[in-house]
Image (cartoon, rainbow, N blue to C red; front, side, top):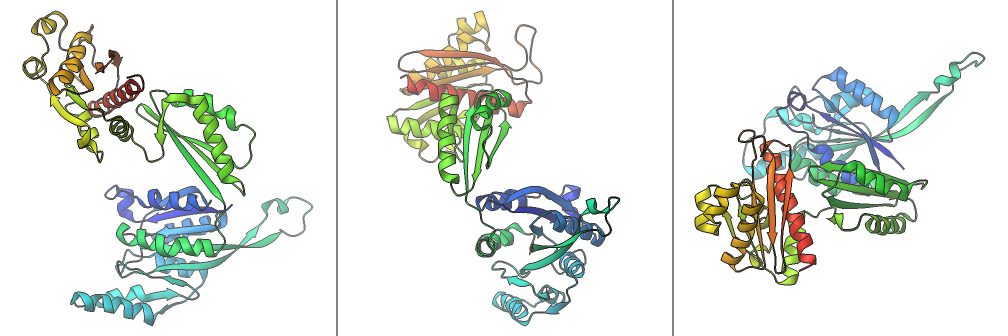
Length: 431
């Protein structure tokens, strides 16, 4: 199994002007080949800093990928740094230069002379064509001498040394150039060079429980197994369980572990790697040929927005009302004035009437009502900031849940809608 270090270059990344999205794109694709990414490094446009980073990465990793710094300006130093570090001379590659010129001719614009520097290629490098820009990618084999520091102990006459074979790949920084180059040229190269290892990955998404609880349930299932990597990704009201298996029987082992985890965690699992909770809810509604309407106060229409972001939701989502004021709760949804006066807008009773009222108003199978205090102001000792009541009215019954979520306003709205979607998902199972 090979290791890869990713080095992202660019002072703009360190200053925070640009978000480094390269690892998010590269790492999953490497993972599909069984290549691990134990380290991602970001360095500025400084030759010495970059030299140190590449040198150290070559000592540690089988594969090093450097992104950015292949342009024509003075701060684009990646090509020169790597060539000097490996002791390779740069020469102008006529094929690359003609490709660059042809690109400018096709656009009918003059090519600045400085652009020609992008045709400089280190000796022995494999050129990776850039189908969406001018700077080609480069792949270079490197030999790294190592010394076994333990051989410097007393009684050892000479330090032991060896030579490690490495591959270093240089990619342009713009994502619109890097992504197709990686898919079309780097991935085939890695397979051709034998870096691919049979690997399987399963991601199971859970809702409504904490990361530590999920880990406590799952980890005994994989304890003592070789070639298995277990990980978690926690977000507000969600935890992903990630299982990676490697080896000749990777797929079969991953399937077995997935079955065991699903049996252990049960219905807190709502989907797989690319599923969103709203996707699952809409798919279930479509399959059951059932309809939905929503009445939201503190979430301001976010629940309706999440549902309507799903393709096909027009078949099942009939109506969404943002009833922020008491007047709209009464006029548009049918909440009783005496209920508001007796219990207040943020109450179990009002949530119940919102869900039942919007279901009756829209003539749907399910209605969801939400009322709460998003904060950071507006709370009282009896009704603190973060208090919310969520109701789901269905054909058989209406469930109302009380919760307190201590999040900022935006995260509060997401978690509340997440809870509402999970309640709706479960309500459909018993309807």
